[in-house]
Image (tube, rainbow, N blue to C red; front, side, top):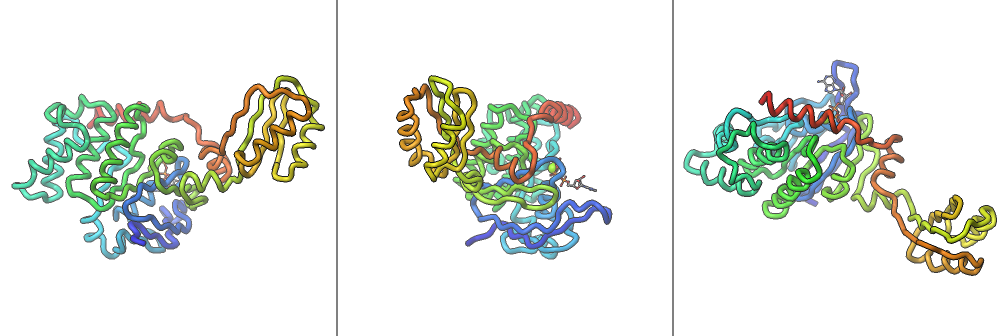
Length: 332
Ligand SMILES: Nc1ncnc2c1ncn2[C@@H]1O[C@H](COP(=O)(O)OP(=O)(O)OP(=O)(O)O)[C@@H](O)[C@H]1O
Ligand SMILES: [Mg+2]
């Protein structure tokens, strides 16, 4: 396996007291999109800062494409690029000028600069607005400009800290469409932090849930959901049914793990709904009860998060994220 990131028993303690990372073990496959999902203060940014060689771990080891981030920082920095949580472009100059400055900082040879800049502008869908002041861009365009800057050096891995924080769903989708192209066409490994459940669900090939400095769950979205065990068959019945009797009968089916009856609706927890459904329907029909509607739901990533972190991630904070984003754009 070609590992983009390998982390072994990584610990980071700030100021001798804040244990931001508490023994992280993590391998991320090259060429994949990987999401580090966790609540505020979980340690996401700390891990990215260590992997991008900005800070050193207290103990443990971390490697990016086999290079030790503490001992071989210079070599690591040649392979990676980083889009921070905060806005990282100048808003009082144009998108093109931003890219020109970054191209110089990154050491892109003068003869190649225009070609490389035009290419990343095109990749991020910013060619039509390249000469406009970045301060007039929307939040989504700013994010794409930052990703364009990060692409100037054709990194093997791109670290993105909360890539779509504060963006509306349409802008988030565009950012991800562009990132997906980078992954597919250039084979760039995408390592991103997020506290948006749906973002991890939709765009990550692989997910780790981090809480209080520890990885508490690991796998693809499907694997994580599956780890909760089971699916729910929800039946809306035409009549109210005697609760204990129906529940008892359903539980006797053996493969039924649990039953929740509420007025005229019945939720049946089973391992495999497709196999269980005909038997459940048969039993209910034999009792002379009409079924109005049936639906099968699977546990969501939200349910997974609830199980491993103990609280649901609420959507609160988005308004303040937007306000913060706008403030940063104005400030430049
Ligand atoms: N420079 C620092 N000095 C002291 N403590 C810090 C520092 N940076 C982070 N911390 C603390 O370490 C813990 C992890 O912080 P971190 O920023 O890595 O979390 P996060 O998951 O990125 O959170 P968020 O979702 O809010 O960005 C928090 O308790 C935070 O207060
Ligand atoms: Mg953070």
